[in-house]
Image (cartoon, rainbow, N blue to C red; front, side, top):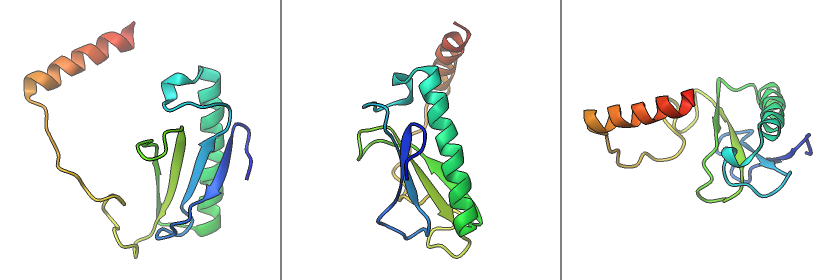
Length: 120
């Protein structure tokens, strides 16, 4: 289903009924920062339209939106309806990986860098 700058596809894996993938059509990009502000805005408008349609169609208890890009190296969104009776309700749909926490010093240093960049 074509939208303004993307196409909505029903995912083959329907473990979560209504799971769709919204793929950017404008050009090849792997990350949001590779888009202009206008392109990103249009993609987000498409995401809102698609997510609203999925919710109306399948009436889930919740919805997850994810953009990962590890398997498909092209900008896209997963729109994943969640149901109280689904196999992983209350947990991520993807298995959890080992977590690494930053030390307090690493966390503070990274926060400082992000603050500087956001002000610039």
